[in-house]
Length: 162
Image (cartoon, rainbow, N blue to C red; front, side):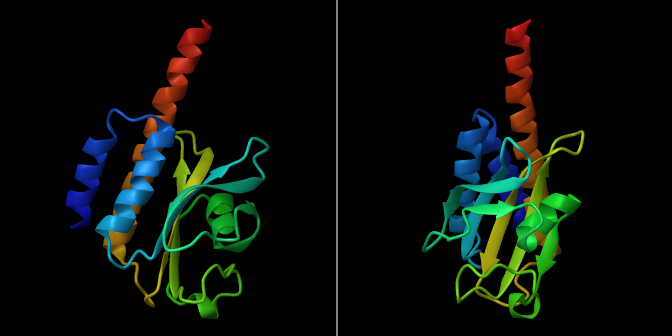
């Protein structure tokens, strides 16, 4: 299912700008994948030292709308530029609790071709060990697609400056 969903989402995102693409991704992931309890995208702020909550889909908002780069699993994924998967958040002291029902979390950085962090996809699940290799493949593929859309948008901005 993840491979088909990735292909389908890529087609759906083709004509969208970065902001609309992020909105679409969080809504579609939440609808399409039953074990994704909460889906959000955090974007790196202008100063590059804080993640700011962008679009999200889930039963409730999180209180963590701004996360310093060094804090929590989100801060770790962005700082180390790698996917972080935690099978049991109750056993990980880095976890910033958002919802009492959350049992596991996956955070996938959105990186440009040069390795610059744009933000990340953050997903909570109410199931322990909810995220396997297929989830990782789906989300890392989507993160690459979002980065490509961002880069395409910003290449056009530079053409207008010339």
